Length: 501
Image (tube, rainbow, N blue to C red):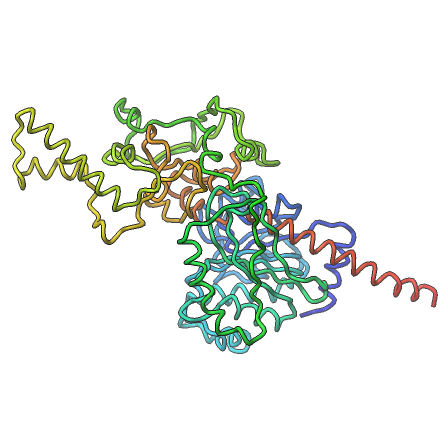
């Protein structure tokens, strides 16, 4: 890398300039929002999905056309990006690169393969998934950032027996970076969601900074499943015990911290949506849900978390309340949602549904209706109540949230059905709305999602929680500022001596 470029960037930051960020695989902007809140300048992003790209442009560039278009990173070079967005000289365009290639990109990419990327650019031509990783490194090479943040699923530490995070650190260290990675859970950082992810931070050696991660701000005893997943992810580290490696244990949370933000804390000030009443009144039907009607807020006092979501600087909630507080049309299942208990998953839901069927069957027969087993009417009644999935094959397909706990991990699959997050309030008897999903992911009420309901759910589920990103970004900003100040003080005697001579 060109050392003069690094020195120019350091000199710029020594003049209190805001570090300029490029967000790769940006989605709608969860990481971007966190870095913006921490004082970074969100200068550009690269995102392939059209709806997510429009959302990013809408929220960070006032809807500017150039910043709202999807970009295919496999067909766009760093030079193309700078020309397209009028960013000037490539090497001087950014100080920070953030983001993370989709996990599919890492399939069959071994340590030797990672090193071949630069030496043999055609090595991956027959594995298009690996092109995303190749492009990520290409962008780091071209933009020569002072710092890098990567995010991915925990399984990246044990992907087919490979520790991709460790291998990534090896590659970045060869490029002149100091690296470290860990596993962090969003619930420890004020997000009302138990979301476990790998985060990797790298700093240019010229900064003289050490990698560390932010201390937790909240306390929670994670359910056994999360500890189990972490153990599986960390299994690959056992092979590195006697070697130098870049994994860092996550900062410990202690019980004297405030309790984790709960689902109820996140959602209670949003207006209730009683799905069964809407259905009975004919006010909900199949079809696209557009975000064109403000619904106000309930009269319940907002929690401290909800107040933050309403008043996030630069993304304050609209005066009339959110316009995307809309839900799915699931008429068969609303009564079943009401019957389910908090924590129930699909096997319990299926058992409840069978009980409901027998109750309805007995009531119909008591009225004199003839519903013999196997008849068309019998089958129609069954189908109107009981979901069709095998309870033994889909144990985690559904889940009714607990009010007094953070939600479980939101996934992009929210864009398909939303059964993974059934509202804890049995009276409302429904899956979460778009705005509720955004609240659980820590997107403020003024953050707008392009498209209709399904694309919005997908964008939310794919995102890094902004509050999690803010914690990391704030910590990185402090580290960078301290390193720049320390370097400036170290350089001052040399400058003074040069001036005297």
